[in-house]
Image 1: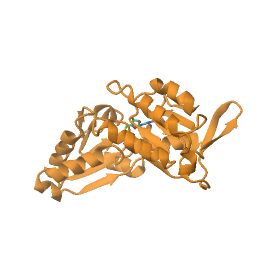
Image 2 (image 1 turned 60 degrees about the horizontal axis):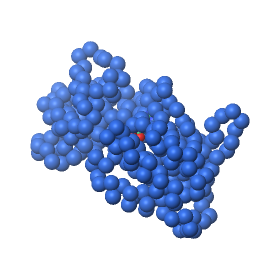
Image 3 (image 1 turned 180 degrees about the horizontal axis):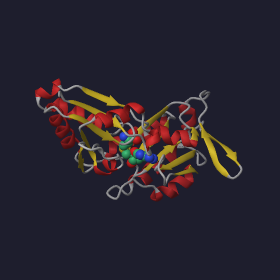
Image 4 (image 1 turned 135 degrees about the vertical axis):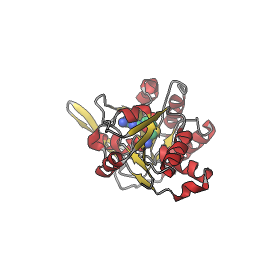
Length: 263
Ligand code: SAH
């Protein structure tokens, strides 16, 4: 049997958000490689070997997966959401680039998944109807100044901004600082979404104002995606239900006019 490597996106939550192609790649694998809790979510199949590891050893895990595939195994590396968004696909290609030249012969496929930002947007309404960007707040892999510079640039350009990895035990203050920065650029009533564990049984979607979000930063956790609205993002209130959040597709004023007087 000749080996292969597929980097599979599991989507944000339950199996109904897993694509049929991702499901087929998982079923066809002889070996599953990934972060332990993601592997636990997958049903065990006889003869299939699970190689669970810690979340922090992405490149080591990627090298292991490439080596197994090179030895002839059909390997699926699993990632939450989409594997190309702040996840394993980049780690695999980093390991491939710096690794054994022989590994270049291994066929590699990436199977996309629904990323957290899209799942959260779907639950909230259509906050990504205009231009948007995504920033990881984790300063494990990049300096905090780079994050704040990118955040400032995105705020000045009036993008809707999705913040991945907003907070963790080791990074307790970054989200508060990011939201305080956002509050200096955007009006106090700008919608901010805290989308937690979307697609899972314990899902919680909160729609706050910018000033409420600054006060609520400490209530986010690692399973939360925070989405900051643009100046045109608005709410449709509904009796007894979470308001719908949407960003119209048309833009009439320039971002410079929007942020003037607020910085
Ligand atoms: N590859 C993943 C993202 C990995 S970074 C994807 O495409 O979704 C991990 C971060 O993603 C978390 O800290 C959180 O901000 C976000 N996230 C992942 N799953 C989520 C979910 N079900 N609900 C809300 N946010 C989620």
